[in-house]
Image (cartoon, rainbow, N blue to C red; front, side, top):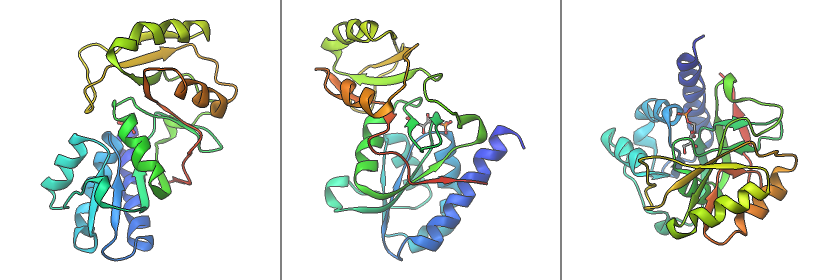
Length: 213
Ligand code: 5RP
């Protein structure tokens, strides 16, 4: 199976999971990226059963609306039963690196509001240890250089993502060469750097289910 076929297969499996587990009329959380786009395609068949969706990016919101799934602001929702999203890397404890598509902050917010995080990742995303994929970090613009220096002290090499701003209007630093021995400790440390909006480590709130094709 090609990578795209795998993405499509896990996306369809996730749509089946939603059909079996999401109560009729409930609101679904939907992630961002090419695998999430396949999931949205597969959701079209379920749109009558959904009360609506909370999107983790403007791109996802537009795509959901285009297939007739109404989208809601997260402020209008108490909890989401299920959130479905892709990953750039996922380890055996279902901790992830996310944010290759730049939506990490909203993804983290929606994940935190969800009871079950279903990760849809093709085989190439499965790793024994996180850290080969550059870690995306969304930052407040004026803090970018300061944060870059703090990351260098941790052994990381931060590069500003060129020509890109997030849906929140901020830049992203992509950080190579970080040794991620303890993902929870690193996520906690990064969260404490002034000017970090969110980092792409999802270890404090990992996935609950890794969907297989
Ligand atoms: C976007 C993400 C995506 O889930 C991640 O980049 C995987 O993308 P794709 O499904 O296109 O491989 O975190 O911010």
